[in-house]
Image (cartoon, rainbow, N blue to C red; front, side, top):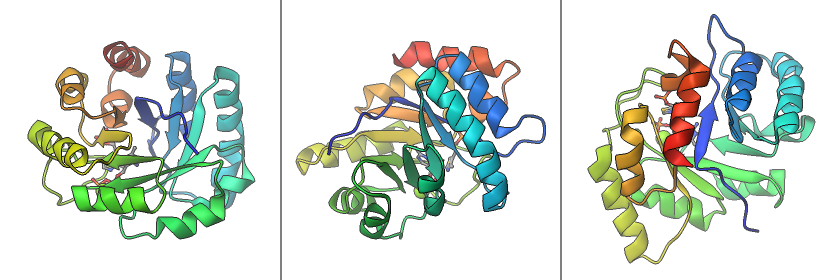
Length: 210
Ligand SMILES: Cc1ncc(COP(=O)(O)OP(=O)(O)O)c(N)n1
Ligand SMILES: Cc1ncsc1CCOP(=O)(O)O
Ligand SMILES: [Mg+2]
């Protein structure tokens, strides 16, 4: 089943000064239509306690709510899908668990992983890192613009098509050139959350993309 996938994914994060709910609210007020709840620090009960109000905010503003990784919570709140970060996860098992109607996204760092996710039923693929990110430090080589050009070229050559979302260290100044590589959209967390005015920064991304 074909799903609507936004071209701008806003990822919440564990922050000392702003709750996930506050981050989601700010993003929705700034125009977000896609919130990925990315919580790495709480118990199921704690996450559900904030997922219900976050789902309610998303519902009010018409935004899609995706959860990172905690597949078992998808059915326990008004959540439209899940993004899987573990690149070796078997997506077919997760698809069976969540059902056809939910959106399933997964992470990849190269063409072969993207191809495997397509074969296994992903609705979109998050691909990175574009550049340096402090949100999830890792050792993967930065793809840069040329990395996305290469991957998009390989997809076209193979006759494959899936919304490809660039992620990792993306700032607003990178958006136009990233979109020119042929990627579908971008995912952002740090550049918005760490800015002095997150709402204004969200709007800046939004204007460049939509
Ligand atoms: C939309 C979207 N894309 C990617 C991620 C996370 O990807 P991850 O596998 O964590 O990144 P690397 O470790 O490969 O850089 C996400 N949460 N959402
Ligand atoms: C979850 C995740 N994995 C790699 S980057 C990232 C989050 C988004 O990156 P950034 O905060 O740099 O926009
Ligand atoms: Mg990855």
